[in-house]
Length: 218
Image 1 (spheres, rainbow, N blue to C red):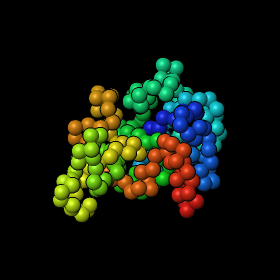
Image 2: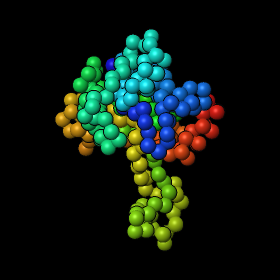
Image 3: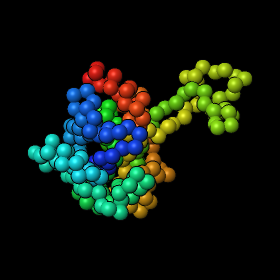
Image 4: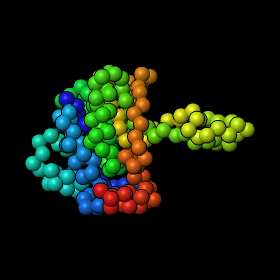
């Protein structure tokens, strides 16, 4: 079985009150919680929450769900500048299971099918996993130097080397390994590609507008 861990904040910086906002027919926070509870291998979902109003709202909405455990964030972890690694470390000290899955409420379209497939991959290969976007387009660094192509040799984009972009949707790792390394990604980690819709991360108002359009089709 698996422990899922999510950190949430009542106050957001760029998209105001995003966890409270209604996306489709339910609040943003409910999308990922409902998805995680659909996955049979997830034995518990630990929510580390900053903000009493959000705690009360979630606790009321999921009052009958025994797998969901809500924790108020400790004072030394409060603030927008606190690294997620510290929040995860603090949360998984209460974890019942050795396999940890970390995701975020800002990834509303991550599917239970993809989560299950990633967990099966982890179980089979025994390597930590993190989700990525696969880029096969002509990329440049900040100095406009080509990263994965030769401008004088215009190969088809599907023939270019793949570049992986960490999308912050999904991380799977061993509890003790994380507590030792204080990282979600390790030297032996493997990538788990997601499609464009599932990998949407709501970080800006433009992201929210896109998510609203997609939610109408669900």
